[in-house]
Each structure stands twice: as C-alpha cells, then as structure tokens.
Amino acid sequence: MSPTAPSPRILVIGTGDTKSDELQFMASVIEDAGGKPVMVDVSILGDPPYVPDYSRHDIAKAAGTTIEAIAESGDENSAMAGMAKGAAALTKRLYDDGLVDGVIVLGGSMGTDLALDVAAILPLGVPKFVVSTIAYSHLIPPERIAPDLMMILWAGGLYGLNSICSSVLSQACGAVVGAAKHGTKSDRKRPLIGMTSLGSSCLKYMKHLRPELEKRGYDVAVFHSTGMGGRAYEAIASQGGFAAVFDFCIQEVSNHHYDTVVTSGPDRLENAGRAGIPQIVAPGAVDMVDLQAWRPLPEIFAERPYHAHNRLIGSVTTSPEGRREVARLIGRKLASADAKVAFLLPTEGIQEWDKPNEPLHDPEGLAAFVEEMRRAVPPSVALEEVDAHINSPAFSAAALAVFDQWVAEGVIPEGRP
Image 1 (tube, rainbow, N blue to C red):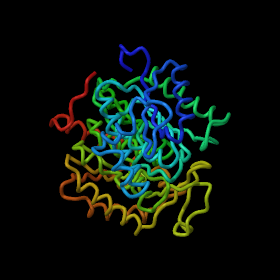
Image 2 (cartoon, helix red, strand yellow):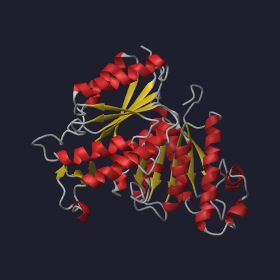
Image 3 (spheres, rainbow, N blue to C red):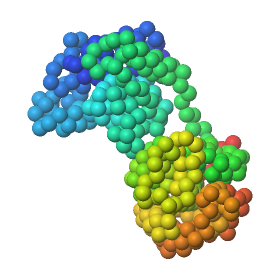
Image 4 (tube, one colour):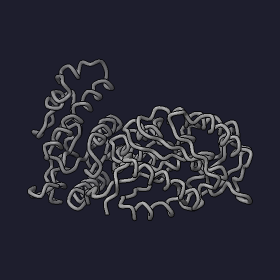
C-alpha cells in the first residue's frame, strides 16, 4: 500500500451485466472495511447498471481490440480469453502506475479462468483473492496458480445475493482489504536462496543447510514439494526471484510423469534454468510417487511398497525401470538450463524411508536409478557423486562446498549480513 494512500485501492473485477448485485455488495463491504473499491467490468454482451471505473470497452482496448470484435470472436471461450488478456494488461498497467494495492475477482468457471491470468500478472506480495464456484478444484492446473493466490468457494450465490452468498463475499472482501493494509512486503535485503524439500520425517538436509546459508548472509525459503509448493517455487524462479537454488526434492517430476494430482505442472525443474539462476540439484524422494491416501492405489502400483504419511497423502515406490525413465527425464530437463548446474548424486539413498528396516527400502531400485542417472546427466551439467545418504551431514557438506565455490567464482552473489 502506498504511504500516501488514505485506504488500499482494491480492484473489484467481474461481469457487471450478470453479477451487479454481488459486485456492488462487495464494493460496499470494501468501503466499510476501509478500502477503496475500483470497479472493473469484464462483461462482454452488456453494460452493468452502475458506472464502473473501467468499462468493458477499456478492457477490450487494453487487449488491443474492441468489445465488438471480442463479442464476435466466435465463441464464449475465445471471447473470455480476449477479456482475460485485456484485464491482465490493464491490471499490470495500473499496478506499475502505483494504483493497485490488491485485487478481488468474482466468477464461475469463466471468471475464474480470467482471474488466474490477472493474479499471475501481479508480483508476490500483492493481495490476490478469487471468489469462485470452482475454488480448489482439480479443474485448475497448478501452473496457472499464483504463489500467493487466495481462494474461497462462492457457495450458494450463482444467481443473486442471499445470506450464504453475502457471508462468503464479505469474508473475501474483508480478507483482501486486511491483507492490503497489514501484509508485510518482502524487503529482499539479503540474496534469496530457494530450496525444495519434504517434511523432515522424509528429508532433513534443510536442517543442516539453512543455518549455514543464513550465517553466510542469505535469506532461505524452503518450499514443500507436495504439488503447490513446487508450483510456487517454479513461479518465483520463472521471474528470476532467486540468487541460486538448492532444488533437492524433485519428486514432483515423478508425480507428474505418473499423472498424479500431486503435481506442480509439466515445467517442474525447468524455470530456474530458463531464468539463468544457478542450480544445485539433487534427486531427493524422486524414487517415490505421491498419491491421495484416501483413494485405492492405482493398479500400476498395487504390488509396490507403500507408505501412508497421513490420511491425506501416501507414497509408493516406483520400479527399477520406472526410476530409469525418470532419470532420463531429469537429464532432459537439466540439459535446457541457461545457467550453471551441478547435480549431486547421493549413492546411499535419496529419502529417509529408503534405509534398511524402513518401509520403502529398495537397494535394487536405487542402484538402477544411480546407474541411469550417471548416463542421463548431460555434459553441460557438473555431476558429483556423494557416497552418502541425502539426509547425512556429509551430503549437506558437499552441497555447501559447491555453493561456496560458486560464490568465490562470482557465479552467485555474496551474502549480506
């Protein structure tokens, strides 16, 4: 929020021709909460019964066309895609001009599609709230979700206001105003290091690495690689948001390869390289595939060792040949990087449950993966084998040695105390 702004300016985006009651109610709640609603109309066929701050004609113009051309584009999908393009462009322009402190979008599946583009155009830290009939649905691909997007189900309000709908909308409006007023923006005083992991019952290296990196003057963000955590990591990496990364839990590559819902999208392990960010990569937990613990195991995994982490998520190990497939996939992804990459290969295990007497111990599978990974790592990537388990202090020491060398060489900027 701008220091001179008397109240946070919240873009309120929706189709005013069909949802005018809801949108005007939202504007009143935002005002009562101490915010300033800025009404953005993304209707296609008609005008709302109120005068928006930005009309559907303004949206079309921001998309480089006219509302008539959008309406005649062929079908509702292409028309709404045109409005999404314009809404995102307008939102970005207003933000760049210092005129946006938060955004809230109301919609069904069509409005949600548009909302995802609007949210993605804004940087991390700008409050983004979507009130949607498909909130948290598997219809939404993870790669389209902004790292700090907030959603709430638009329950019982598809056609007009009622007590349930009003309750949901008022919560959402209060949340976005509160976030705009009180959210802490990232100061980035120290270079930011991105790290991926799972909980410490499976992967533990962050316990060794984070304090050492902080001593060196870096800020460290550890992302939980259970689908959306990896997506947030990739989104920030795609914007060049890290000085370097320790991408040590790439299990989501396996998850996506085996088509589970615990996915970060098809571009996992690719965005840091595209953005020119130095990467230290390791295959933490890539021998496992995460599944919903509350559903029966898919037939392909019916005979494989399985570990239920809790009532939500469980992990099954892949076969030796399956691990070879994933090793080759990792190699192809690393080959596309435009920055320095080191791949650390721990030869004694890549997650805690693959130890003697643990439920996912599989020496044959690990040997197959290590063998294939040696072949799959491209010549552009420095391969370093570490004769240790990934959770051992020896592995973390090897990772820090690479990091310190790159800092000394100027590949990674020096930390700031």
